[in-house]
Length: 314
Image (tube, rainbow, N blue to C red; front, side, top):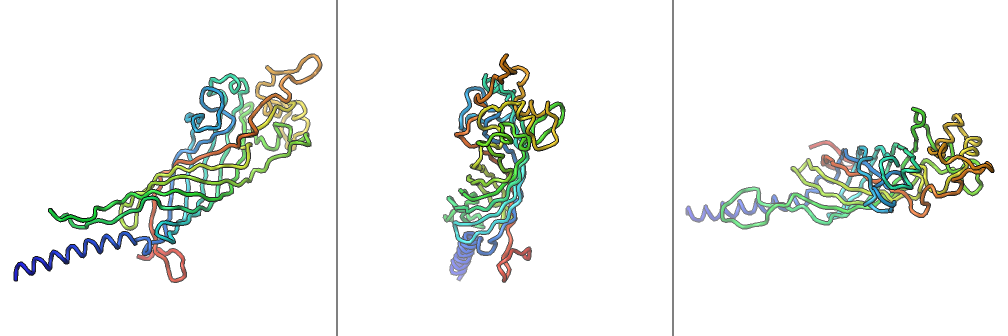
């Protein structure tokens, strides 16, 4: 009788273990929603700054000294075992400075900028590696499935963002887009760029489940852009005098000249009155800019009410 009871108890315990494992595997059905808050560094790859050496459209040209910080809030829903969607609001600051590189062309250009970024995006996530439940009891000599709390994801989406590149000139920050630093205000072939643009977010996530409600994650997300003017630099030099005479904002002409070419006094004009650097390379219009966020986030799982909306009810 005692032996029988031991067997029954063992079976009951093992059943509860695997039931708990199964419950954890399908936990996304019970808690399909998540609210997420994140914080971390933001950086960009554009024409300005960069590593020492000739500029390349490569992650190896990133200047980590120019890294700034950003944050995000998001709502996520898992609607299949491996698929989820997420809507996210992100904000951060991007910065670039030619003075921080020893590469001759960029240090001679000597342009410095910063821009705030505000982004609203939606994305689809695919779970590459799933969490897995394990024993809830530590039984010596009992074999079974070991738990795995780490999951990995990849994602792709579509977003819209606002930016506004500025330069510090004579102790004050000036918005560069209204100045038309590359002749957008007087050249028919160059039009002012929009400060609202689309982007394609892509990246990878590793998420660790602390318990049924809480999780933490690390995310690396790159934004591929459809503009090369994130840093207000793309094509060739315009004549600073013509830039100053055609500005669309109340900006001192001296400021407009320096915005078009911070080395204006050094580059100057020849005896014919021709600006030496007119139509010389200022940027690279064949490679669009991109920016990225590296986020450390906290996740809180929520249930779904009868109407399909998230609820804080336990």
